[in-house]
Amino acid sequence: MRLLLAVLTGALLATPLFAQAQAAAATQRPEVTAAAQAVRQKVVAWRRDFHQHPELSNRETRTAAKVAEHLRALGLKPRTGIAHHGVVAIIEGGKPGPKIALRADMDALPVTEQVDLPFASKVTTTFNGQTTGVMHACGHDAHTGILLGIADALVKMKKDLPGSVMLVFQPAEEGAPAGENGGASQMLAEGLFKDFKPEAMFGLHVFSTLQAGQIGVRQGPLMAASDKFTIKVKGRQTHGSRPWGGIDPIVAAADVIGSAQTIVSRRTDIAKLPAVVSFGAIKGGIRYNIIPDEVELVGTIRTFDEGMRQRIFADLKNVAEHVSAANGATAVAQVPDEDGNPVTVNDPALTARMLPSLQAAAGAANVVEPSLQMGAEDFSFYAKEVPAMFFFVGATAKGIDPVTAPSNHSPQFALDESALDLGLRALLQVTLDYLHGPGKV
Image (cartoon, rainbow, N blue to C red; front, side):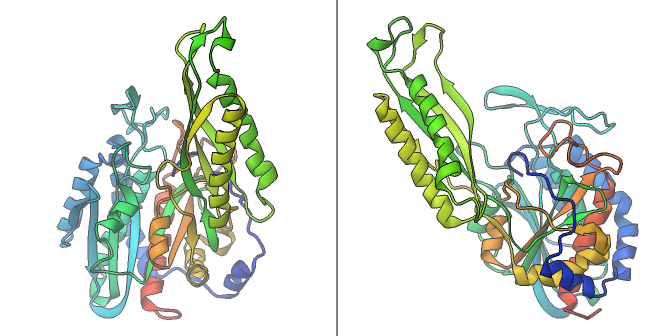
């Protein structure tokens, strides 16, 4: 998940969605209980192996090979090399029924692990010209292990399974390296749904701001659209003692940053939906007594509404160009400077239908409605193609406050491994309930 995520409410809200589901009896399927017991230790072992051997986006060679190897051992025929290292397999049930897809992401982050584990990552690499550690600091190792466990379970029951299930092991959720493509959008571009178009798709994410044992889900918008921008403010270099001899892009850039704060606070209707404009880096200058030619600003925009998204693009470009001009400088504003992730939207009807399944796995009192999340997910691309539902699984151990626990993307992110069991049971329950149809076993 890109950047840090906002804190979940952690409380069950009295919404019509939850009130309706509370009225329905929800119990865990016995085959889910049996499957979870059978694969529990294997899922833990897979997760620990992937954790100890993390790989960055578009570099998931070992992970993809391990995944494909196990799928072949199950008798499946995985397709490999999709969007570089994506692996896809289809489990065909013995009875007619729906087509659905399940997704797990496989990539890690350029983060040096600070968690004392016997299977902690010691991997290092060069990223953006700097030496760094590599860590599954977002929990994708857990997602991959869970989906392998689901594969085990579904293959064992496929004779009585109505319908077909596509397993999608996706690379580069965290974003392809500069100059490369990848992730969900690239898998779709390379024909992921060409021959198998699911009628529904499901995914999960372990989440530090939920307690272990909890699940978070909501209808409609869940996670924000994410867009990156680059603004180059161009002046004219001069000696620091003679600022009048040039045009100072540093001062102009500072004014751009200050004025940009009014885009959300004064120009955007945040009573409708939240939005964020954040500057993440300022690059410019080389010596204390030289005013440089140019300053580069980079940052991110987060929105939940396409109209608001486009207006913020236009407002930021306008601020950059006109504030720079007022300082005698010029600005080249690329807003956005690449295709970002759209809003992750949970199909309302699908979410309402599957909520009892999540409650069956976790218990009704442990399924909560999170606030809108300013973090982004490229699962959103699948959700634009087919009805989809994405949910969170609590990762923070009981006794630790999830509000202050190290968050996803932190070098101290620590997964309570009970999340593996709950994630597997929840996703398997959702899968079987959907395939069998409402009220059927």
